[in-house]
Image (cartoon, rainbow, N blue to C red):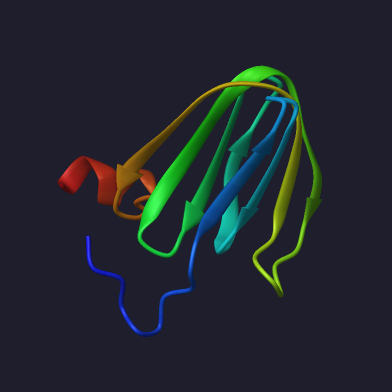
Length: 90
C-alpha cells in the first residue's frame, strides 16, 4: 500500500519479545493483557501476547511502548468504523 505524503512513517522494534516500541501510532483502539489494537496512518496493528500493558503512548510524537510477552503481530487494512450504525450499513 502506498504511503501518502501526509501519513507518518511507521516502524516497530521488539526486544526479547518483552518490549515493543512502535512509531507512527495515531491512537489506541483497544487494550487488554492479551491484545492491544492501535491505529497507524493506514492500517490497524494488533499485538497479541501475555501480560501486555502500555507503558507509554505519546499522541504528539506517535511513539508507543508496550511491555509484556509479545506472541504475535498482525495488520488489517483501513481505519476502524465509528459507530454501530456505520458498521451495520457497510
